Image (tube, rainbow, N blue to C red; front, side, top):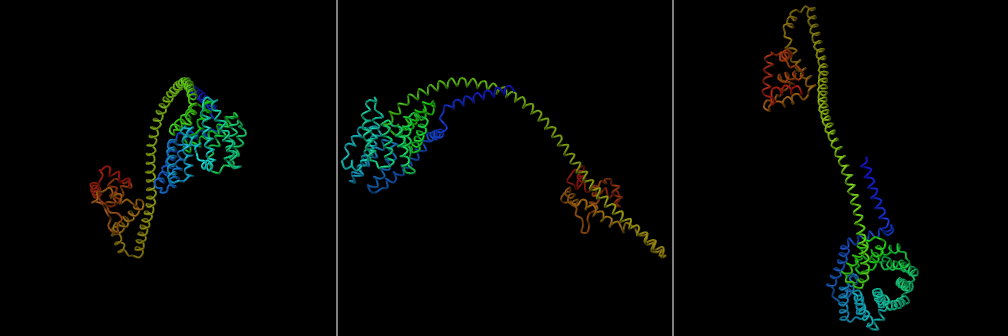
Length: 541
């Protein structure tokens, strides 16, 4: 009993430790999203495989394309797949698209190809080259692609502002970014999602997070059904972080990160920011996995524009991870100590259980032996009961038949007596002499045998078949037509009824004792069983 108390106290202590550890984890509201992100990172190869399947499908279409316009369309589709997946490949695709556009002499395709190349150059970190390409865009192209060009300027200056150190040097890029974002707000269609999204970005630059959140809400309502909400979630998270509402920011960062991972995007910002936030809350292990995933994807996609930003978080998370490992080492020591105590308790409990088990095994064996003995006695009792029932049945039926037979022969004797009296009264003495001189056996013995055979076969209907089963096949006995039993069968029928003495059998059947002996000896010699077993087998038919 004492061992059980020790074990219960130890388990309670472990449960309390687990409860305290989980109290500092993510809130219930975002926990499910974090588990989704964990699964997406673990199964990232499957997501990438699905993206590569889409790319292969576009490549097959590109190979089979005939017209330049159709080939350019395929390259544009490929660029959309690669622009956030592999920056180097997207640059090669953009250049190939520009060649096709120049060959086809299509200005629209050419301007779009140059914007694709600008985006690719920005993705690999060539910001100033990307700006130079935008500045050299022809006037016609600048007018036709104005919205796209303004968006590219915003994207490039945002990256320059975000990645320039010291931060004082970054202010020049922030000013230009504010100007371009303001222009986009003014030139966007009223009530459109683009207008509200640009307005939200503008408010963030102006350090007005409350106004930014309000604008994002309007952008979400204007968003087309089924559209990706990753950008809106990320901008919302940035605004919430500015307001110090970190728990809500974590929710929106989780949504944005899950969206990026589901689309197999390798150039993203939400996941490293989420990792940094989790690290500040103490969820270091998960933060380390998220930042490692971010660095791996950036390196695979060669998104150098994101590399410097993510690298800022890595030393912080590594230091925190080292602290956790040191504290884990201390916790491991106490856990090992507790484990030793638990193992000692379990060993003691195991010894007690083994002893009790052995005692139970011995008692079980004794009980099994007694049960076997009782089972043997029960079988013997059942066998004896069946024999008694069979004997009782035979005796009851045999006595009934015997009474009927006696009554029948009393009637015969009574009739025989009246017949003689009648002859005497009529004076027919000659007839009396004839009746008395006729042997009774010739008149009544055969009917007696037949009556006996009928009675016996009523009691034992399968006697003949079972009796023949005890004989060799060539010596089987078959009664003649009109007979029920042969003399041999009749002798062993009396044996089955319990009359084993040959003299009594001879008297009953009006045979000589020698005749009965000869019949019995001949049948025994023809049996498939030994002599003693044959006699016992007859009694069980």
